[in-house]
Structure formats: C-alpha cells, structure tokens
Length: 100
Image 1: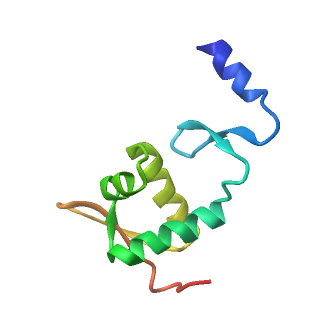
Image 2: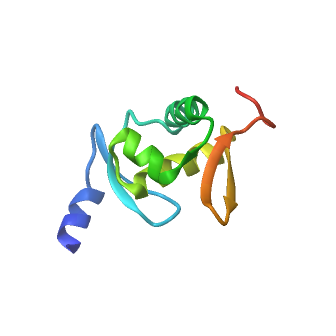
Image 3: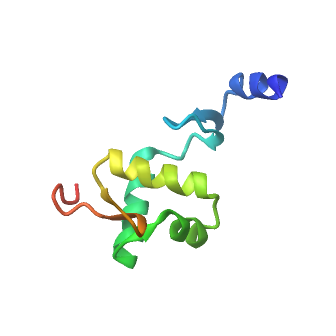
C-alpha cells in the first residue's frame, strides 16, 4: 500500500493526488477546479431545493465520501449552507451570500 501511495504522490501531468481536509485522498484530474465543482454542486442543490449527501451521491453516481467532500467544497466557497438536525445533514443554496 505504501508503494502505491508513494507512486501516486509522484504523479505529474493531468492526474494528481488530492488530499481533502477530512484526510481522504483521491486521484483527480487537474481540470476538476473547486470553483467549477462548487457552481455545479450549487446547481444540483438548487434544482432539488436541498440535498443530503446520499441524494447527491446517487444523483452523480459517486461515493458518499466524494459527495460529502463536494458539498463541503461548495460550502467553503459560500455557495451552499448546511442544516444539521435530527433528520440528518442537508445542504441548501446559500441565500445570504448569493451567487457570484
């Protein structure tokens, strides 16, 4: 496993190893820009009025971990905001900061 991780750390070119604040690491195309991902995620949240991590994962066909990271990126950039309640974690369009 260490050899694979070391090889991934040495990658250069269109694919790079990305570490999220949660500690998750993924191989990602350099073209996956956080600002573009945040705007796309906001569009998905707006279309549904709100989204849970599970709903976004199913909609995009990605893992729960990646869906959560995608929503957290959009939150960090002010595109969405979260509501944590007994019903779970949901994300809504951020109406306070508006769209850039």
